Image (cartoon, rainbow, N blue to C red; front, side):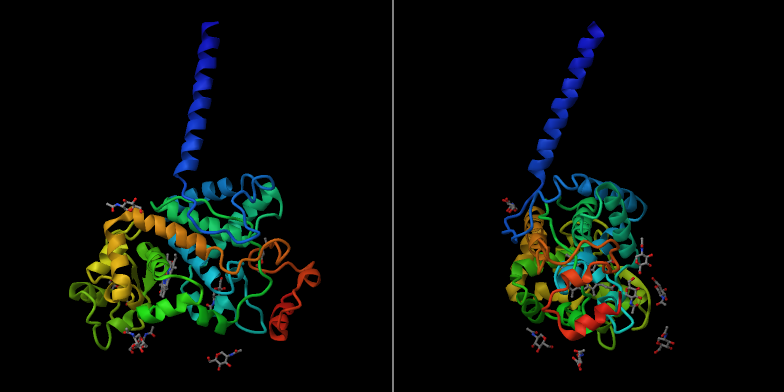
Length: 359
Ligand code: HEM
Ligand SMILES: *[C@@H]1O[C@H](CO)[C@@H](O)[C@H](O)[C@H]1NC(C)=O
Ligand SMILES: *[C@@H]1O[C@H](CO)[C@@H](O)[C@H](O)[C@H]1NC(C)=O
Ligand SMILES: *[C@@H]1O[C@H](CO)[C@@H](O)[C@H](O)[C@H]1NC(C)=O
Ligand SMILES: *[C@@H]1O[C@H](CO)[C@@H](O)[C@H](O)[C@H]1NC(C)=O
Ligand SMILES: *[C@@H]1O[C@H](CO)[C@@H](O)[C@H](O)[C@H]1NC(C)=O
Ligand SMILES: *[C@@H]1O[C@H](CO)[C@@H](O)[C@H](O)[C@H]1NC(C)=O
Ligand SMILES: *[C@@H]1O[C@H](CO)[C@@H](O)[C@H](O)[C@H]1NC(C)=O
């Protein structure tokens, strides 16, 4: 009798606690202030695949326990996907024999191959639970969000409902949309303004460089033949040890203060002239962005708030929704059974050739 009461009491306590925890969880999850593209929704999978996000999060927790470096690879993958042709999973597609694709463009050379495998593994797990209803593009967006969260950054809700594109981007298109690290602030601002990003977005998104690594080849032009005068001398000398030649295949961390932690130390690096790329360091040199860098360096909450906002904005670049595109059964290849029903007539002949030869 007494034990039953105790049991009831204990289970109601657990229930109350779990309600409290889940409410608390909802409240602390930022949603940002971005308007949402028609067709995306905050509750998209609630009825058709309610476990999608928890399956991905649980799996990634395990992946990152083995190697937290994969978080950086997944964050960058979502950025590349969105900037080239929109967040449509196009970055995941293998090229065809008819020509090079997004994956073959120089920036792709430094995408982690493991990131592609992780996305496909997540797709398999999610589709096993719900069937083919969750897109590779959404899985990539969720994985990027979870990468930020598990690295110590903010957690936030994502509008979902992206569909997968039918075409991979050409090499030219990829190069035209991903600015190189040698760009100064003027060029970066101009490049990102074409996608409606403000200077605050640019500084906040560059904060993605608070985690991860770079190959020497991405910055040795700042060391040889002449040392970039905007770079701290000791920092430069240490980089020269890691990268003794311009063609060294070594890598180094993007944020020397806390390479695996998603925090605001990247901006502290910039204030100390320890930014790795010109595109990073010049944000502190240029008067248009210097104040934003400083404000993020002294207020991490402000950085997190702006980062979430800009990520939600980036995550909606040219998304396909509704009946556009498809839900891929394999993230690296287009579905072959229904292509003629959904191939948009607006596609150029050249693009058509590129994709038809895949089938
Ligand atoms: C603003 C223009 C940007 C430029 C010029 C740029 C450039 C680069 C370059 C050159 C690398 C190193 C590649 C290598 O040599 O291995 C890199 C790495 C990285 N970038 Fe960016 N990036 C930019 C924006 C972003 C954005 C918006 C994000 C995400 C929000 C991001 C996240 C990352 C991450 C996490 C890495 C490390 C990847 C890894 O460890 O595998 N970047 N970026
Ligand atoms: C680009 O990445 C893909 C992704 O797996 C890889 O198969 C391909 O070989 C890479 N391209 C080049 C030129 O290395
Ligand atoms: C790609 O760009 C280069 C130079 O920018 C140009 O010469 C070439 O014709 C372009 N190729 C295609 C297929 O558009
Ligand atoms: C940025 O780089 C471009 C191209 O090298 C150059 O023309 C421009 O003057 C630079 N801007 C600043 C403010 O340094
Ligand atoms: C790689 O970096 C180490 C120091 O971190 C350096 O001793 C070595 O020479 C570098 N190797 C190459 C191939 O650049
Ligand atoms: C790198 O460059 C040096 C000097 O230019 C050359 O001797 C060496 O063979 C190159 N190494 C690779 C891996 O290309
Ligand atoms: C830091 O930024 C947050 C978020 O915008 C703001 O609420 C807070 O007042 C700021 N803190 C300081 C000390 O300025
Ligand atoms: C997905 O497509 C790739 C490339 O064609 C192939 O190697 C792989 O086996 C496919 N995976 C599945 C599960 O069918």
